[in-house]
Amino acid sequence: MKITDHIEMLELKTDGGAIYPALLHDGSHLILADTGFPGQTEQLKAAIAEAGFAPERLTAIIITHQDIDHIGCAADLAKIAPGAEIMAHVEEAPYIDGSRTPVKLAALEERREELDEPMKDVLDNMRRGFANCRVKADRLLRDGDVLPWCGGIEIIHAPGHTPGHICLFVQGDGALIAGDALNINGRRLTGANPVHTLDAELARRSEARLRSYPCKHVLCYHGGALNLDLP
Ligand SMILES: [Zn+2]
Image 1 (cartoon, protein in one colour):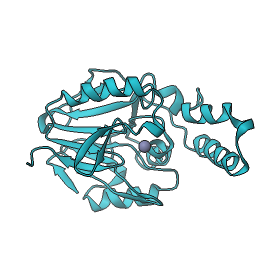
Image 2 (cartoon, rainbow, N blue to C red):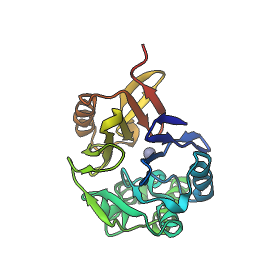
Image 3 (cartoon, rainbow, N blue to C red):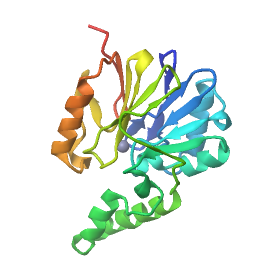
Image 4 (cartoon, rainbow, N blue to C red):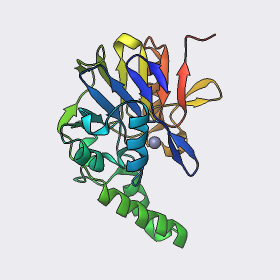
């Protein structure tokens, strides 16, 4: 679905509904923001093709944060598009490349003895999932960096949901790729889902900062797109 001249929102079906990676383009660059769950590579390739682009032409893959639904197909895509630079926030990259245990996996590991058998299975699946989709960032991003593509893509460090969560503000389009730092409920923009958020107070401060940006469009990974220009 076209959001602006530079942004397509992709839809990947999941058991519980859908998730929405973003594809940014400007004629010379093709950038994917977030990569779905493990096993969604074919679906993601098809969604990119349906938007009118060749997956192997990706020039960059930006990962907003370490959660399994965002990093799932990054390693596969890096093989399909060898020219794509993998990018993540400097604080998040060690969790994505496996040098640190992802925060939500670590929290479950800590409680392993208290978990019932189904939850232990969840934990084992999660551990396997993360082990299979590790990917090393080629470029580390920091708050305030501006990638000179698509009219300028500003990196906003928005911690809380995870320590190194980033959002992307596409300056020329007034569009915010919010990842999981914001959600949409009905037609209302809300903060990070508290159930999956590591530090709720930090997430609230990030939300307040994100709301100060001059946004016409907001894309939420779990909620889809909201056009703030509409009455
Ligand atoms: Zn997510």
